[in-house]
Image (tube, rainbow, N blue to C red; front, side, top):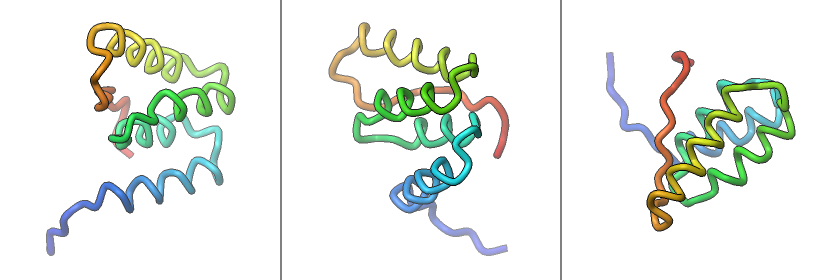
Length: 86
């Protein structure tokens, strides 16, 4: 088996397209939020809440992000535990 390095930028592009194609997938939205390193996590979670307003996982992730921002406003990395493997 050949090990390849992960490319977060390509992963982000792939997941961005995936959530456009499958907007009701909570797991895809949360995976995209975890990959985000540029501080766009809040915007991603807002789009996810509009796409899947009944998902408690997305609402909890948004609340955790707000809590992290309140504790450290300069923080740009979002730490959200995965719910299940993709």
